[in-house]
Image (cartoon, rainbow, N blue to C red):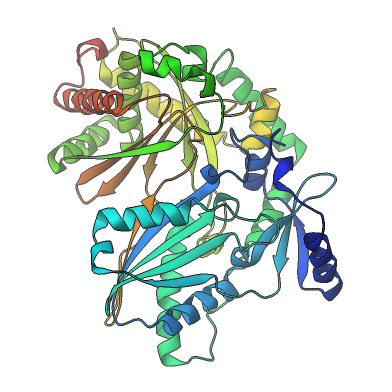
Length: 470
């Protein structure tokens, strides 16, 4: 367990009394943590109750939706998805999932003044909502607030704890919410259909699969693949430090470092060129972008041994694709950047490394344990750079009387020093950079983003050029 985690559990007074009442009445049932949940408690760089563990999004809703209709729709989602009724019970051998039999929609409403409806004001209000911590035991571990800009113009701000959600979950929530709204128009008494597989049933199946023999086979691969590897900025603590950042060194290793988000866009022609390069090379778009990212990161830092982490949805079976919950995993990807090698050769190496790593993916808490690594406050145990190509379904929903448009946000304390999240937006690519504010400033990110797009464009024009010349 993270060394700072214990202080977030308060089992005195009213909470202890409520717990006894819940257990005696049968209102709750207990389950072990899922493997992804264990990562938050055992291998995260920040305490599980830190706002770094919040997943945040803004859902723009257009339509004549009343507060009662919205509350009823959220209530149907709460009844269908057990993680909306899930919190955690501290135990002698570690936390347990505590699933309530029933739950009430946790949604609030606010009418905005005309001056509060612009995008900047909405973002400011959203940050306030995102930053409020959750009570891990009392729950619920989500909150929704409907900001009303007009009779048919609303913004739903949703914050949900990572222990019960991942990126895929947000798409499920939007679809369920719109489905629940339609269901309410047809028959207010009828509930949404049950999910094919509940989150706790999925967790039980994962525990049954990951027996010691299977874990050790995967662990042997990772001991070899990550031998003598180190997180990039832990290994090179002086990399990219400005005098102002050096003066912030005292707070560098703490969880108090805020997260900053910068958004850029790669034009459609560069996105198309990257896809064509991937096709000609027999690689994926992910590997193509990762090869350019690793090359840029190597040029930017001077390091040639680059380890990044990437999320995997971990929803290969159709039965789990309608289920809200934290199912995703994390896979380390190690790259050796050689400036004398042509980019085409680097891309082939990255593609093979990625295939091998994904084939040997295992629960990250078990991976970190197999490597003998544990987190320090503010420090991830294996990597401190995150790279992702977001391809989980986050739909824009359009119905005759309602439309919903979901956009991700990030807030709170950075779990990693640096992150790059790329989302396909038609032929174009949206690039979101996440940084610790006391580690990098905006000029650093502008420089890195320029370097990344320059290398990617050069690789698309001339893939046989040496990476050092791009």
